Length: 282
Figure 1: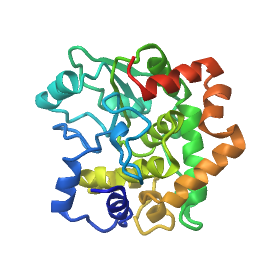
Figure 2 (figure 1 turned 120 degrees about the horizontal axis):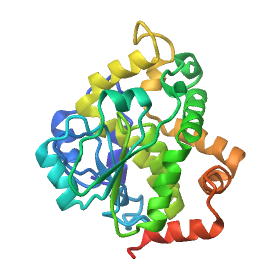
Figure 3 (figure 1 turned 90 degrees about the vertical axis):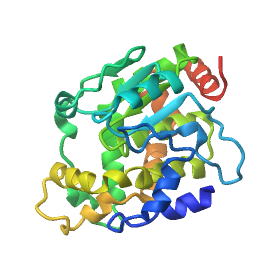
């Protein structure tokens, strides 16, 4: 499907199931990668651009997904042998990781760095106004703060191991994973429309687990009913919320590159190497 078609499908309200036949086609076509036992898995170097030109970020190097707790033996083989994954970065909290550690896969190193449990709950009240922009800005700034060590480890891998493909994930492969994907795509020089499309594609990628993830979101936000004001905005993915986050990021750090230098501690020379490695094979 074209970038325009994918965006239209991704903008479907989360309370409305997507057509199963369409979802099947999309999830077995680039940028999505079918890996048995996973969902929301894709090669972010293959996210289509508005012009149809290749992405600035090279394909076959950076993959993202939802949780790997149900990864099958066939899926393990596909990650290690076909995709050539060398590292898996787990962007989950202590509680999430302890309940379902990533599987040990021959030839792949698992990287998980503990965070505080401050991110364990989401306040749905922050998502009441408008389309939830305020809530998304707060939630994603918490991600930038809590997962600094994880993000730094990923950028170090890109800097030091440009020939080793890697995958990163959280539980849904949506928010924490989405922020890191936005960071990497932006550093590589992807245009804003392509970056925002990747953000929105999680609406399609999580469809097979939609009901389970809605229940997870309800539990994590400590609400009794999905009718509570703000929950609908929390559950949906909208470009206006991503753009609100980017605007706040520009004001606070000067964008993703400023965050990488000011908060993650990379030098300008480091960033040059990282950008080059994201764009071209070593």
